[in-house]
Image (cartoon, rainbow, N blue to C red):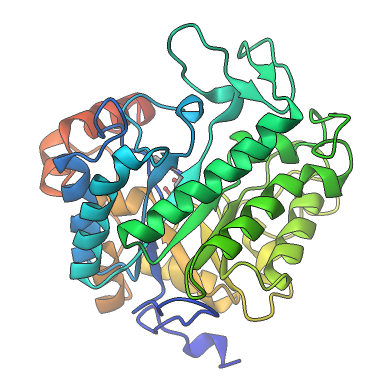
Length: 362
Ligand SMILES: Cc1cc2nc3c(=O)[nH]c(=O)nc-3n(C[C@H](O)[C@H](O)[C@H](O)COP(=O)(O)O)c2cc1C
């Protein structure tokens, strides 16, 4: 391994499968709520992601795309659940390819957190009164596995270089992972092995059904429930060493936050993942990386590439800027809507951001 202090954000990143990234910067998946009502591709979404690709990101990840109709977590979310979506996805893949970025479609199911229509209950590994969710039957879990695989095949047909499986943020796959709630009596609940079966079946299915160099990433996040950091590390290590995924994308919300769990409080979150053995799998981290300096700190800890969320909203060319200038830092909030418009943020996305960044939009 080269001296970590000599690593540059402008270095290429190679993978076991699929194309290399031109640099170590990755536009993190971000739901923008600006697809059409049926999840179809819109001009706003093409422009938003096209600008990130033009802005120099080595990898451009799409917004989370639902793999089942009942898996939609937000209105106007991108969808990959039917062939109806294929031509729009192909348009996006083509825009990204022409800009020279590696492209990936993020695949997800919201589970209990779905926004459903026609009085349908959301589905989850377990019944959940707060979300009016019903527990999935075993056969339905296998159907979800098939639908993740079908969406990945659609992404391949559309021309994407790969997909990322969204196993983070308490959406469906993370709901399966949750040992405090998932007490299912079938093969998808109870033990660690059973709670991670759905992830493994999806990954195996995608590997079987797509070409050999189709690039596959997995996103995980630790949450604050006791015991989850140790379990998340164990699963992260297993997956990285499995040879099945090409990169692990750890969504940490704040890479340098000290964990709250006993036994882990003395080192920042990023270090707990950067130190894991990973064979030839690559590791990315996300969470408050808003300057070249913080990105370099992650590289020095051994991370292979960094995912940029909010700073990629604020600067479509954040990647190019931090490579050119080691002192570059993102503008602070608040910003105006007209500033966001210059960065390719459409009206619907700005409306959504205004609910998230309560005082962030002037
Ligand atoms: C507007 C917005 C939408 C997001 N949507 C997604 C998503 O669709 N999928 C996902 O895995 N993470 C999503 N995230 C999380 C980001 O990918 C990223 O991990 C997180 O914002 C932390 O990085 P940051 O501090 O650089 O923003 C979203 C974040 C924001 C701000």
